[in-house]
Image (cartoon, rainbow, N blue to C red; front, side, top):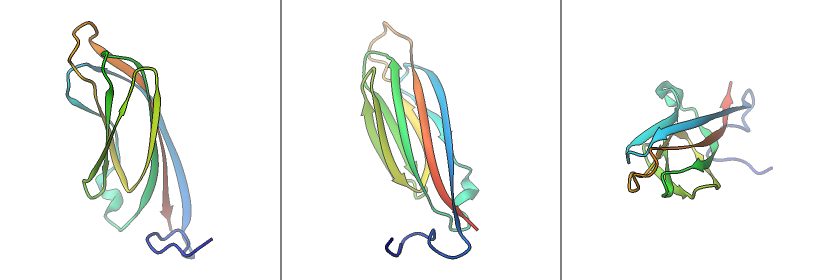
Length: 125
């Protein structure tokens, strides 16, 4: 394995730890952002780094695509769309929070529901 210049996983005394966070969501079709998961802000205070894969399954819909917003430790974001009945995943460095937005364009349904899973990896001393 090559030398990792942006992480500390290959330094002596560090171990790579993995956590999985999974759950269901049921949120209104209101066009508002709903946070599904958020890391404690103190996690990055000591220079910690992480990598995480976010998977979202969009089960029942508001008849429009669901928007997923992933925020990093530096507050930059990645966004992607998930169509009804589909799953999409994205892997990012220094994952800080995961939120969804269910559109309110069709009044026939009042909620969207699905599942999420976050596979988070980080180094500990």
